[in-house]
Image (cartoon, rainbow, N blue to C red; front, side):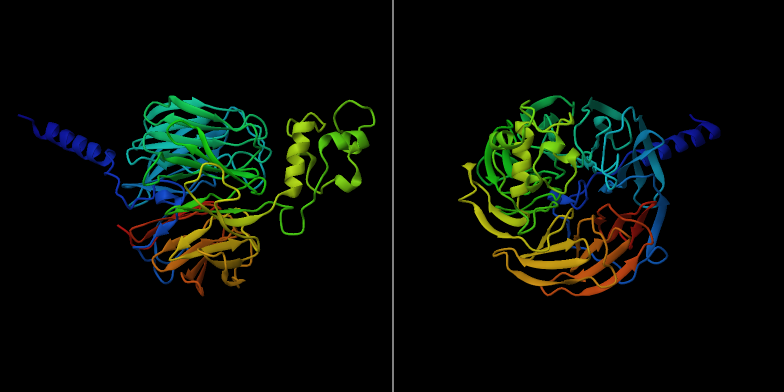
Length: 480
């Protein structure tokens, strides 16, 4: 029999064990970037009419520097950060915001990246029992929901001018990661429980991109991984990594993730120089060499490129191997870049081979987002563009329903819109959380100023919105 002291110790042990074991994940949890299937939908929930840093806040905690979005798994809210040369993964208690665990990894290298990118940009993904994270300055890691490391896979270094940005996604037992870069791009599938490589698809005919892939599971046939890249959308077999189909005509360096609704893929691609009327038809490399290669070394120095063929973009974006010259491969990509066309497109899924001429349903090319993903709800696509331009588009035809400015929040937008009940919520770069009526003829119903930058996309679960700003994580609304 236990004496009173032993009984107290034993009781404390049981409480500690109970707290440490996470609850089971639920179907409504937000376990990847933009939630279930990456669609950004939380239709069966609501938010308070008024909220701010001081109103309708269940909890607020400080967070390390990072731009990854929160994921919500059972009783945990998890994300990544990078601080003091350390790559950090951490989980908070969903109920009170208390830090449950934090794991650091030494940042032994620092990839080149755009000022808007970050060492902790990719969002974690969970299978409901474990967490999977990607840092471009290291590679892939997996933790239990209690913070125990399960496996790690070093990757890189990467040759991406602006740094890597795609988040990992899960499909059954496979963890998928798109690694598009200027040289040696690839698509990777690993076994989620061991980190063992299942297949690796070569994408060396692509340059840098940042889009998180989408998963398509048709009623009949193999599952597919849908990857937007420079100038092409490609569908790969989820089972083997085989290239099943492709569609030409995308822009260069796509950033927005695609979404799958039924058997239709929607994708927004925007990059500088790709708007209507900005295209140029450049000659083949052999013709340029004849005209401009003064020293006949078979490559082009910056000063050799004729003025009428030059572009205002940076030299680093076209000198892909950074040797100071352009070779035939690099000219081919540069030529394709100058001809690239920004667009929002709808693609009928289920094709094989080159489907460019057969499966494009429609294309729209006006006032497109740079980074934010499209949101689909009730036959309408919702788009937000930097400058505070908000557009609704008919998902069947590509026809614009309504376009206007978000007066009071005319600024940059990098966070993607999400549906919360009958409202669309989108956060601006400068911290304005805009709430709109989720309808083709949208209306702004509120603007809530959080006073600091927001790049992460909110997670929404059971009436609670988990919002990451530059310095904090908030839980807004009651939730459970």
